[in-house]
Structures are given as C-alpha cells and as structure tokens.
Image 1 (tube, rainbow, N blue to C red):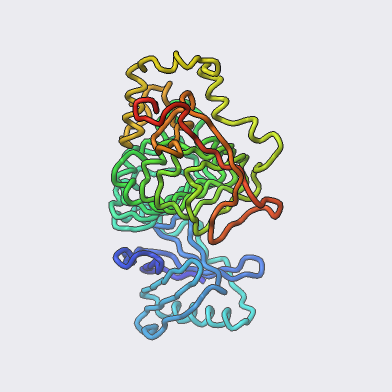
Image 2: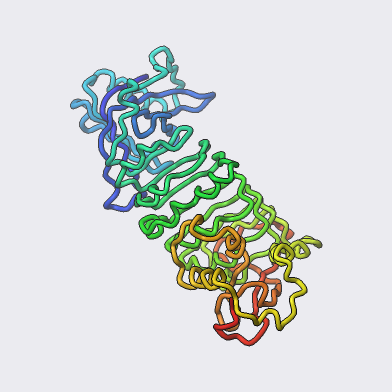
Length: 403
C-alpha cells in the first residue's frame, strides 16, 4: 500500500539538539519480501529508500489519525516516522494493514501501485540543506556540501574517485565509506584523504567506518581526527597498525577483524577499549614478525648498515620539517609534504622511556606478548595473547637525537 504526503524521520539516537528533522514530500509504502513485512520511505533524503522491518515496530501513534496524521516508532534503527497526508482514508487503511501485520495475520500486499520513481524526479533531487543525515546511492554528490548541519553521512557501496577537501568543513560526527570502491589512480589517491586535515571535521568526527574498501595501510591523516571514538577497518588488507594511532586519545571502539595484522603498536597497550575486535588476523604466526613493516622501511632507505657516526651527522631540512609536523601535529595536506617523507609517518613512534618521537634509524624495535585490555574483546578462540611492538631510542633519550 502506497501513501504520499509529508514524512518526518527523527533519529532518536541523535543528540537532543540534532533530533529535529524537516518534513519532506515522501512516499510511504508497505511491502513483503519473502516472508518478512517492511515499511519503506522514499524521499530526497533517502532516494534509494530506507526500510524498517515490521517486527521492529515498537509503537503506533494514531491519536490524530482523523486529521491524517500517524506516527511509527521503530527500534532498529531507532527512528520515529511522522506521517501527514491529505488522503485520510488511505492512511486509515494503511494503519489497519500495519495492525494486522503486527498481530500475526497474513496480509496480501499488492505491488501494482508501487511506482519505480517516487516522488517525482524534481523532488528526489531537491536536497534539503537542513538535514542531519544523508545516505548516498552510488556516488558522492557535491550538493551535499550545502548541508551545513549534516551530522551523519553514509557513502556505502559507492564509487569514489575522490572526496572534496571542502567536505572537512561539514560538522559530521558519523561517516561510513564501507564497501565503496576507491580510485586506483595515483593523483586521486594522493588527495583522497585531504578532507581529514580541516579543523571542523577534526573536532566533530567521532565514528569512521571503512570496512571492505581495500585498504593496505591507514592514511596518516587519520591522526588529525583528535575526537575519534570509533574506528572500523575490518575486511581490508592491513598488515600493521601504525604507532601514531596512540595519539587518538578518545578512541575506545576499534574493529580490525579479517585483516593480516601481525602485531599491535605499543602506543595502544595501556588503552582500555570498550570494544575491540581482532579476530581473523595473523597474530602469533611463526613467520609473522619476520615481515615487519619497519624492516621493509629500513631496507628501502638502505640504512641497515649505517654506522653510528653516520647517524650523528646534521640532518637535512626535510627531516627538520618532518620533526615539526609530527611533534606539533600540523594539519598539512599530503601534497604539501615531500613524497619521500610520507612513509615515515607509518614507522615513527614514541620511545617508551622518554616518550619522544623517534624514527627506526635511531631506535631499537622490540616485541612483547600480552593480552589486549577491552571490556568486550572479540578474538579467535586460539588467540590468548598478541605481539606488541615497542620503540626505544638507540642512543641517549634526548630531544636532539630522536629524529
């Protein structure tokens, strides 16, 4: 059954100041898929539909049904749908149908009134600049940049050649890129994470989901997201977690299942996570520690056999610039940093004694075995402890020798 009218969707999990949402011209319809009944809404915010299982319906608000108004409260997701329509008769029939469904009756739902496009295209493409949540269909639409109050942005299963730098000016607290296809072009990869360097998103972003997007390493720009609480990078190709993740002091939910991780950084050792998923990785594999990414870095820069005296020569200006960027957490875009310095972000870490940043050329890398600390720890039943990688200054722990 199809209802057309004004629909407001309120996210009951949103902060109190962001719970309000504008009514949008929408289509509300009931449908049956296999043996399950659903209520779906389609409008400019959800042009590809958002659906709710009838079994998740917690409460019906039908006090004002005679005025063409109806409320439906769902528990998953926790949304309150407010419907207002001129077709009061159809709304009453819709209410009766929903009541029959939740009472367990078998309800036959016709499909002939379900249009392929609803509402009309001019309404589907009319973005609401005051919305707090947006779910993309297959790509990033630049009109999203007009949503100055956007709190939740879902770009799942999209084709993303790049994300605009200006996206960092949106006050989003939730971003999901899960299942999306990222560009393989070098230029696109170089600028893809620039939005993380903008102060606004650095302050507001609390949840970042990047599952199943083919990541081989985490972008070093993620260290600018100082208020990040939840990071999900499951089902990727990660072989290590960089030491700089310890700089994210508010990170309490970490999901890294189904990767190729061999160890964790010592910078996260004292962290008590609320939830940590490390299942289906390569911890404690016999050869896992022989393929350390720091060893690969040392081979690449050909410094494995550098003598101690050679290490004490004055560094060039590029190393001084790198030291300044790391120590002061300067929000520079990747293109503003020499490409030769990019790999250093993946291997730099704090000495466990002096707590100063040090590069592998001037440090000793050690591994210890311990169990992560988490209120909810998800792991393989054969994994009791995992290796932790720590860094110690090779020479005297002084500020002048750390980089």
